[in-house]
Image 1 (cartoon, one colour):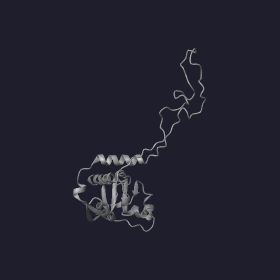
Image 2 (cartoon, helix red, strand yellow):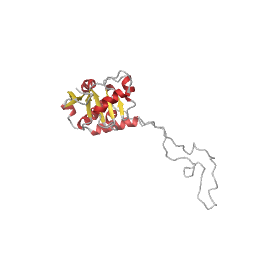
Image 3 (spheres, helix red, strand yellow):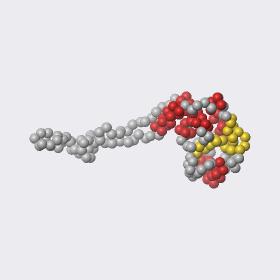
Image 4 (cartoon, helix red, strand yellow):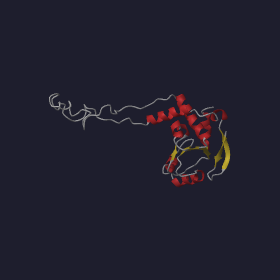
Length: 208
């Protein structure tokens, strides 16, 4: 499986070969779903909390006698059935963390990249060298290779420099993540994946 290398003017220059034995097989959606769910769960703070009847303000004294008044029995002001009372079975601080093994994370990343390739959402571009943190330098290159401005895209250099990060952060729907920091969620989330030529060899080498 070969992908053309896009030049900064939108033309092609050579190609990069991805092993057919690895990247042409069907996508394992189960593994990809498990990884995405785990990454999303691990981003949750888990700080949602409601006050129970022991935490809200109010007297604990029984409001009126149990019998002989001809009305429903009632306990304290803090009862969950009363306005401003405590909340029964409400959310409490908890951890939503899900642990994934290293082998599963590696496999899920492969499935995410494989999905992008098979859907035609992965492209290879010549490295963008930014000498100073100027947004127009990156925007000029992307204008020739990006189909629409509102399509979310992830740039994947071999190693991200501070100049590239600063020059890219003001462009809408664009993120930058180095090849060594890739994970299944980061690849799955954007619509388009743009690999730098220098990042391809080390990325393919993970599964050889």
